Amino acid sequence: MGRVTNAVASRRRRKRIFKKAKGFVGDRKNHLRLTSDAVMRAMAFNYRHRKHNKRNFRRLWITRIGIASRLHGISYSRLIDGLNKAKCELNRKMLADLAVNDPSGFLAVVGVAKEALA
Image (tube, rainbow, N blue to C red; front, side, top):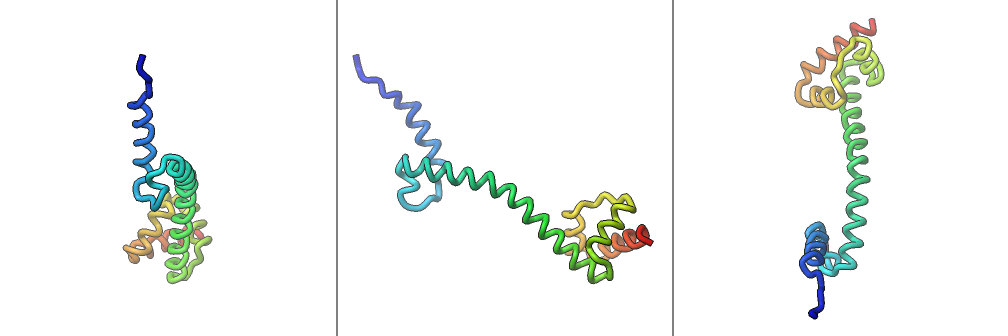
């Protein structure tokens, strides 16, 4: 009887790992043992950095809102407090977009926040 190598399944496994290693440099892209280690590490960082991305974007939005609100004579925390009291449901992403792309619209939002605080 002939030797059974399970060639189709093992090749499929290798191809799946090598496909994920596309763009890797050196032996990390074409040697199975090194590639599988590199891919596992990359996938772990990928998961972790998706969480970091959310944090970084929120920080960016808060910075943009803070700068734009200071230009209109109100601090970031007072602006957010005023918007909460006015039951305004604009999130920080939308506020930051308004601050950058539509200053007159952002000024109207600041006016709503100031009215709610007064």
